Length: 216
Image (cartoon, rainbow, N blue to C red; front, side):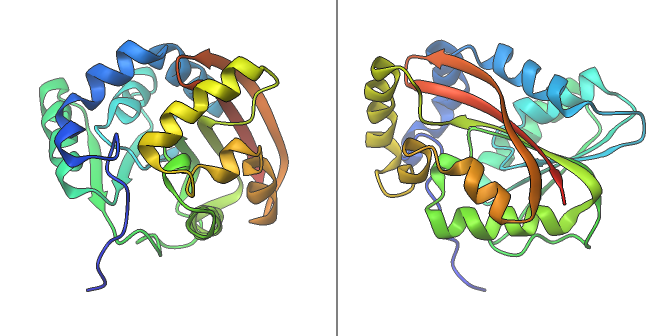
């Protein structure tokens, strides 16, 4: 099997156990994720994929807000998925978790009505972003929707400076497209239409944007 290449949460493996606490302290995580779920407009019976689910906070919130949706979380980091599994068991949530290689998603084309993703894409270099977005487009149903919360280029100079802090953690190469505001263009090029930045949140580490789009 091909070795997985990815940046762990907070870059260093020893920081992984502190991920939830640090994210909660440094940004309005719940507010961002609530808005992301709201933008997704999930209906009864919808199949939802949490791409790069991490510790499953977004998956669990989605299931709590939409108990009749079928929620799947996927991530390349098996260790962080173990933490996610423990959280899901504690919450007694019916969520399916899966790890994968970071390339082709292990789902049939058109498997999901919605794909959501929170603070994942800035971990991926530009080529990996393109691969991920193309695969997400493939597994979405016709007129399925993608909703992403991640760092983007802010009009605020202060927010742009703050984003350089997180870039130091996650690397300047993978975060380059985010810093230049190129994520919406990459999404459009992957086969999506009507790509819009729906919301902007100022945080201690730069501006987090919610980007929404529909499969072409």
